[in-house]
Length: 332
Image 1: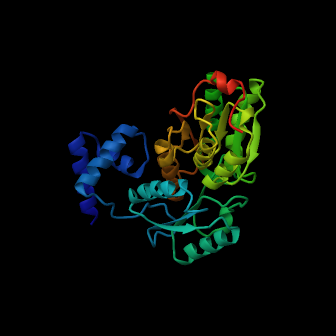
Image 2: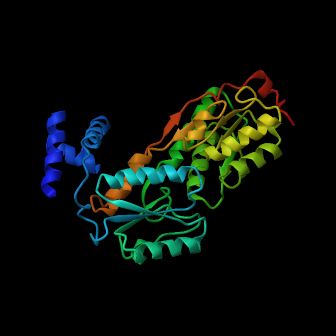
Image 3: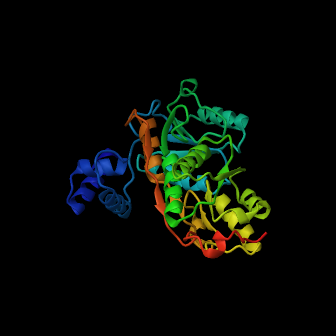
């Protein structure tokens, strides 16, 4: 079986004119391989039907070839995308993924961790439920935590604070100075990092934004969009796309046009951000990089944590404040 694996790597290397080491590194997500070449190598591997014949060597038990992935709420739009990214990274290492859902409940999170360990997973990747801390030394398998730079024991995360800075800088450059932040849950470190990044840039410019906390859901955004007095703001920056989209639908029902009356931004670049009208200016995370680093950590390929840059995605939901918006005559 190992001979088949070697032959497949050699075939890919010959086809693309690279070394077998480069192919191996690209398939495992290690080494210095450009993203373009790595994508080309993975495409050729898929074409050949290449499947690794063993699990990542550094996994502690090496018995089940299975990684446990625990998410806080699989019903929230971001987490299925994370799960897909983790599964792709695991597949390149010949590993399967067992997914658990904490359902936003700390006790359920503990139960899922115990259950996965009982089922013999070789390692765990945990996106923790808000307000909880994962202590790796309390878990008998390698653990990678994906949350925020401020999270104790975090192994891989996007630079949420910098993403907030990108949004704030964009709105200031457009000329907005009457700003609303839909800051998400108060007990979420990710939401806090995003909102604090926004506030940092706004305050440096002498602008004091209004903050409103809520759950990070479409429904919460809709409630805020129905209840807030929009006349005070020319722009709204949401800490999550779901909040922004719920808010957008509600304010449109009140006669507020985006971006003519109010600019709007989100965070995460969910699928809905691209198809809502108008398409949403937002911040994109590099889920593939975060997932691959988490896998590399539990596989023993790296011992360091990493924070990955985010990208501002400009779409049609932001514009310079119009005379109408500056006059504070939004729908009541």
